[in-house]
Image (tube, rainbow over all chains, first blue to last red):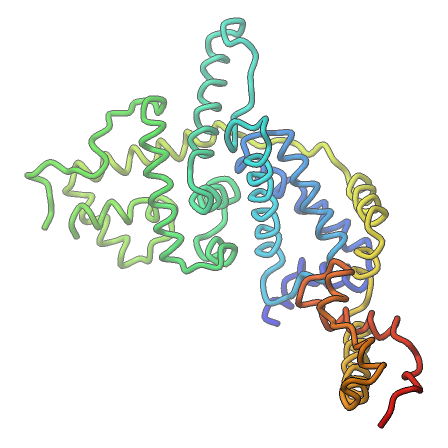
Amino acid sequence: MKHMEDPDAQLMLAFQRGDESAFAALFEHYRARVLNTAYHFLGDKDAAQDVAQEVFVRIYTSPKTYRPDAAFSTWLYRVTANACFDEIRKRKRSTSAASEGLPESILDPTALPEDQARSNELKREVRAAVSALPGNQRLAVILQRYEGLSYQQIADVLKASVPAVESLLFRAKHSLRTRLSAYVEGSDMVGPTAASPEEEKP
Amino acid sequence: MNCKAAKKLIPALIDGELRPEKAASLDQHLASCHSCRQEMAALKRTVETMGVCGNIEPSFTLADIRERAAQRRSRDPVFAWLQQMPRLATAAMVLAALTAGSVSGVYYGSHVGSRSHSRGVVSTQRVSDSFGLDAFDDGLAGALYVAHAPTQPNTEVTR
């Protein structure tokens, strides 16, 4: 049990033994992180609030599913990711959902000051670009960019290797760069992979 | 290092995840490659732009979690009971069930064609299905079956 020195693992083990205050401590520490991971993944505030609650309900009702062979945070991010993927699947089954990760609707942009309308549009485009990524790329870029996890930590969450995470992030950021090129200020994009012949290094 | 290899490493360099020797090699390439420097600048701006999507505040409390958990348990009492059972007690019941199952299986198995055999021993899979358990819970299902099994063998069995 290599993560026994992890204080959050200790709290979770205490909760498994019936210490409710341990769960309360974990809840306060991770509530915002779980919520915002779900928010950036789903692009929907209400769905994120619901999914985040679901994550903690799952932990509260099934504490024995945690084993200290992984850091508690690693396991928590996995539970969060699974809940997000469950939400995506639920949306796909639902007749009312048009697609996964729809950006939130906003007020009529023409009624807003120009700066705010532009800001809202940019947020919408970023959310749509992230939502358009395949599941594992989306998760990897969210954990790296918004949660600040290292490549090794992301690899632990995904049960993948670090080179695999590097590959996921390379593809994800390349896709985002292409999709957001019109919105990135001062952009003077060259082609995604081409270099000028005289500069190509053998 | 060529441009193809360099472009693959640029995201990791931006994220501070490259080993020193690889970072040094990439820096050397970037110093003389305008195209890759542009690629790096574009990726940096993209990463910065992603920051426009800030965080949101939680609207739920610990009390909400407890309430939802209580509602879930009240909708599914078997689930609640199974979740509360300590692992050790489960293991003990499984062991007892397997032992009892072996004994009763030997006893009933030695009487093929007898009336008791026609009643037969209910399989743990059938018990699992009736309790809505997955296959890995068959040990527990066996324990549940034993708890509901007849306490005495059929005395009409012929030897």
